[in-house]
Image (tube, rainbow, N blue to C red; front, side):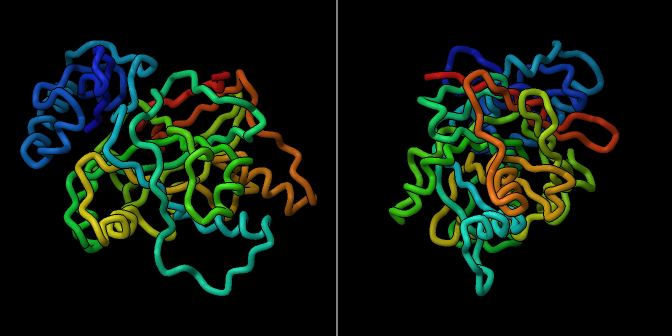
Length: 321
């Protein structure tokens, strides 16, 4: 099924079921908010699924993704991985780092979760001197995950799949990384596409707990990348199990894949500017592409091979705070 959150004057908005073609929606009767649904998923998901099938059969109101909030406008927890080796290897090459062996565990950090920017919105930044960059990612949303859940159990707690724009300030990141104490200023809140989907909506394109679809990115309406999400070294089941090793995960935990990247990035393009700049440094000795300016837009979406939209379009504009 497909779910979205529409504004109703409250911080968490109102949960709606959305038709498969994203053209119609109806307020969910089984749960008022997505967070409430996730907290009692086993009981409420079948009821929501019945509402979803009824909507697909007809009825509902026109759905305008531009009016939607993020599926979870605020979340208890946002954890972001870095699961695409091609992206990490390129960045290592750019920074002159040599790996003697692969790290056995996923890379992950905890970021801002108290707000996710709406899919169509102006996103405020203090200055363009900080190196404003987008990052296209796939992500998942869990229900409650017990402490030390193994990979198989973790897979059973993946309830929804989402598309995320993980904003980054590239010129601040190296400064904070050198402290060894994690990111704060370099990682503003993320944005999210309007619709969250259950994994079954992806059909065969949900494979090995990965999204086997391209994530299409445009910068100022010009194609920038269409990397496929299957190339993760660690699947989302691995990421959930890693996060739950020493703590239970609350229902509504969102976990990101990290920047979607493929080894063929020179052909398929990139999901962030930093990767494009990295390619330029490797190929030409210097970066030629600048970061985002005030007024710039980024759009992201993913579609099934037959053209059916999955998450709807994320379209955000950089503005001065």
